Image (tube, rainbow over all chains, first blue to last red; front, side, top):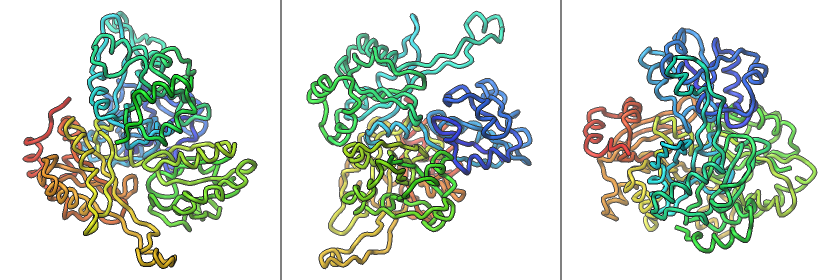
Length: 285
Length: 285
């Protein structure tokens, strides 16, 4: 059987009791290691599980899934996913492939950033569609996220922005020359995300949000050193949140008083928070 | 310290390793037992934890929070929440009260239905705001959910509908007479939800959805006997999904082919699924 096991958001102890039982008895244990990361390294997981862990990079998962599934018709194979197996990155393709091979599957849910972001005190009910922010380059600044944010903003909903991470990426040159040399991993920060959002508004000029729009920066959600910072996009564009992973929530107009009372404690500056808040928020429902 | 510990969605083994460590050493362990339920009873939890578990009903949490927090400045108090502590039901009020009393808090995330619904194979990115469906009565049929669904539908997003549960409710008469006699618990089924949705469309007549609109019924998400059924609202209005808890997802117009391929396996009737699908879905982006 193929077991897709969610690891949660922070470290080795965020796995569920059920998930740990499966990992301990699985014949092979893979760790999906390219769409998200835990805050501990593979060695720590191996020590905790008492099992070797095989890193599954994008290449293996997307083109070598049959290698992962080999023997899964008889033995138990565990495929570990940071967060939830069907969270920010769904692994339905792997499940579909398993079905084609008549391999039964079992999913062990866990916390995902999509629900973990509730730690901000914002009601998950009040979130619209989630968007992703990729690293801009000189020549590539996709703004498709902007249209989705606009749809959420028009309704007055919060928007969760998931930030790009680049793991095991090859430079154009190494790719062209077929050299398996990888760039150092990069994780987008809240500050970078806020800056890119403001840059996009500058270009699009549709007034979806601006320097005074309120947002929440979240770092290491679920970890003991989780950090939340509330401020205007201008303030957040220079905020220092520390180690990855980071996420950002653009506050929706329909914010409730209870939500405001809770997030205010994380304000970079309570004065600018209150000023910006009365200007554009609190229009419940 | 006050520890808010998520229990996940299914049974006693869905708690995380970190959560279990906290429960085992906590001085008092409360279980929030009125907004959601696990599929196992309190006794099973107590046996698994090796600790007595105190049931915290709405009354205690909303008016007796200081009783829960008593001594939490010195000892560890665990407050267990089905799903995630900040998921479908947020307990920010308890955290705020703890802060007023200078009691440190710690949150242990877990799977929530808000992310667990990803087990349907639908991308969590493509969900709009979440709505709740309450039990209709002869005289009370609130349709505020309809306006929110309409907003999601106009964008083309999926809508997660969380279904009402009634635990420890008193009849009007017993309430009036101050008799602490409680009605048997009730859990809304997918069929009831689909019927009430169609009834509301009949009344509102705004063409937000109809009998041929596709939806997914989900029962016992995350449990070994999890059940998913895809069909038109008409089909789901008579579907039998078994034991609680149930949820429903109204399919959005922007469904991707990958999502369709995955959910089609759960179709009550693949013909009606295909017919309805080509009529109104697959308009990606």
